[in-house]
Length: 552
Image (cartoon, rainbow, N blue to C red; front, top):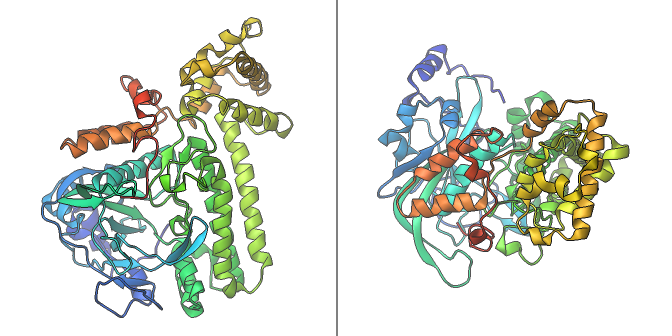
């Protein structure tokens, strides 16, 4: 997203930024705090903050900041050189010990629905935006520290973050980007040298854990809840100011503010959200806590808390222990929850439009965009050139029903499926077991494959092979097409936990090892096959591998 450069941003300064790659050349614009009303109370104490979009607040310095990892792609995006990222000053800045000239740190005020219930004011309880950078391409990027201390929105919390959750957020942000999923990014992961008390499962067994800070990067961190809070409080003038700011900054092509523009903006948010959810379903990502304060107005995956990767295909699975009973945020329910959340955003901005019909039209567009996007996505996963309703709807429905009947690794199954050759002249003569042999690596418990399930699966394979021949595509071309959308490597829950275990013992090398692996999720990467293996049995029920909480 482009931003027209101000008069103060001269070509000389741009050249300095491009050549030095240093922290001193970062160009801060800080439009959000300059153009929107802020909290008049300068004291950093927990409280309600009415009639304001943010509170100015500085990060809390720590004793012994240490760099654990950084993303070279994000560093390049922000115009920072590798040498700068490995410097002491970089570590101090992105742990919160030092502010650069031009930084204007703040925490945003927002509300939200949590697990379907209105929670009132929430806000950036442990996220502090350092400022808004304009890079050499004219892109606006917000630099945000997560875990850098309390803010007025911290409620009863300490504003800090622990290493385990910070590693998971750092790695998953970048893994999702390389998978092609819309997401916020992560620039760095630093250790604070201090301990943080956390009760991981809220069961009365707290312990001290290593503290850490992640620097997150995005064009905007605005959420549905930023608009909901002002609507809920009746701050309609402020709601309008925020929507006008958002359109001018992040959706400039929509033009000048008007009721029609607001409806078009909401329609765009609906479309972006549908695209994001389709990608989640494609790669088997489960967000785990799709509250409205965790929904980005840019359609970016935001707030990596108790997320998880669907290993065995189970539409009812949620990684969040808090959601274990109701399973509101289960894998298969994510499209419906996104729609529900969009309805809440529509309710919030209704006062600016005054009509229901344009909002309902946009919500209908979400449903259509998701359905058509999902169909196209599934056709791609199966290697078809296009989705053919008369044949593919039943084929896909039957496949997903089959996958759920036995523990079937979703990632491995689709990757192995690409190896089936529908043009094999001997395919029609093969037995059920022979047809299934290339896919057996995907099954966690082969004994679950009853005679009836084997028959169903083999019959489906025969139908699938017949369908692939209709596209008149060579097997090698189809395999290439499938492997471009079905990753071989994802951030499996147990891999993240292994990196956490090592880091908590003082060895952070696996973080970089996984980061490098996840830069190329669709490539074969010889010698790395072990990272593509099924979840080991020891990880089936281990905390951090199977279930997580919101504790971080």
